[in-house]
Image (cartoon, rainbow, N blue to C red; front, side, top):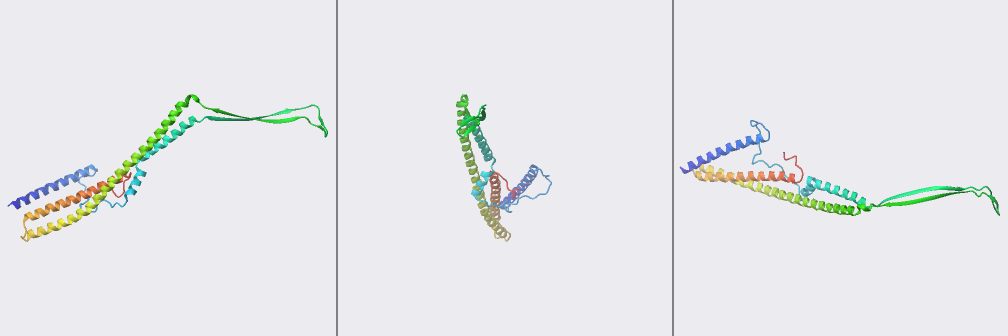
Length: 259
């Protein structure tokens, strides 16, 4: 009598669970913009998980360092700060102006000159070059410019430190999701084996029950273990897929194999 009551309770719980699954399916279709009456297939717990991930941890970290927008933005800010420092530094350099000029000067004589070689022309034509270098330095802004230069140097060092902090945070995030992915993958392999054993035990218990050599309690216990094994595999696959998506997100990109 107790066995029949337990079996009836299990059937009731199974019916409730199946109804809840149908509700979740319809809600999911609505959330992704599909008609609830549309016949679509979802991932089965016994199917393969979304995708095999073959990248190493170092490759993931390198990809994240190159792709994450936070790092790119911080690096752009650093480039701007360096250019501003160069502009401020130019104010501290005196401006130099070089002026070069020349003129010609001639002297004419009415009479010829006389030498032991004979008469010669005394007229002269001379060219003169004049060069001038002017140095200008705005002394009034000297102190202010020096302060601005020191401020710019401090800002550059601060931005460099920010970039290193962001890279460390990204690396930690990638490492955590990578390890979660690895753990979930190992758990999938383990739970698949456990599910196979649970199915075998359930089939054997059910056969013994049909041959009247086993009780309904043994069947219900085997069914409960089978349900737990299916649930464990479902959770492992879910954790793997979530970790995979989060890992790609932490790397600054999404895989075409995900969706």
